[in-house]
Length: 427
Image (cartoon, rainbow, N blue to C red; front, side, top):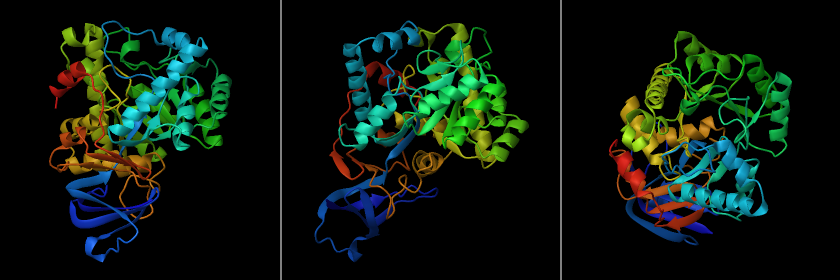
């Protein structure tokens, strides 16, 4: 199918993008064939789609998603280990896992996310849904799949979305086990998280010893995989960077040594502002968290913001992800992560858009595939009525999503009113 998108304002995904009027985007099957001034185009043989002056930009790329959770808040903490054990216990509940994966991936796409990285899922369902989408058997974004992560006994997501390694040799063996299902990356749980902490002021306690981190990273790199690591403390960042991790997910307040390690190793910070915000800023009557959890949530939130700011100031790449699956972090709110990045880290809207598109694609190793509007890239883009360079919130309602050349007009998403109302207070 050949399509010509005309009468549009083009935002191409570059760092200093400005709206370009009078351009046509020509698509041949799933690829952008050309981007040309409309007056120079021969549209014979193309289905012409007149966008009526709307804004066309690359599809959003979310670097941190846990597919099997939707972000619905609850008054009581969930026992993840028990929930996963129940979900995988029989054929009927496994069918529900499949349904959930299909539903959440469809929601991601309809919200404008045309690519995401999954960084911890149930068994090998991440690669299962990735392959079904790629084969046209399910609707969803391009997925860079992680499947199960590697943790340690008592570590973050241990026994639910992560295996429990006790020795360096066992950590390497789990990497090989995960690699057998042909994922796109390996995920490590180097520290605990906000809800793992038992002491006020000590979130992100180091859980995975340096030797285990090194063994897992060495094996992953030997097999050709990048390593993403859950890290929420300065100590955890030092251990992760010293032992081979490629992307620091979440982050913490860095010191000069951590900045030096980022530079020397070429590692990247993937900021996730969305999950800690409800813990740090919501009224506890709404979030239903303890005083310790709220305090630690604020430590983590401020640490992520500071890490992103310092990395940017030192020319260290920063990517964006939502950590979807945490309470109040849905599969349709990647646009909020851009807004938080703009408001909390002080970046211009144009830089937030660039980060969530071209820069995220480069960090994920697919910058030659997607992330920008140019000839040869995949036809992954979104259309909105107003200029997101002036107001990022226009991205919450899209008029069109195009993924690998497939056009979805007027995408509709079922949202959670309670979540929307609480999060909108911080826009």
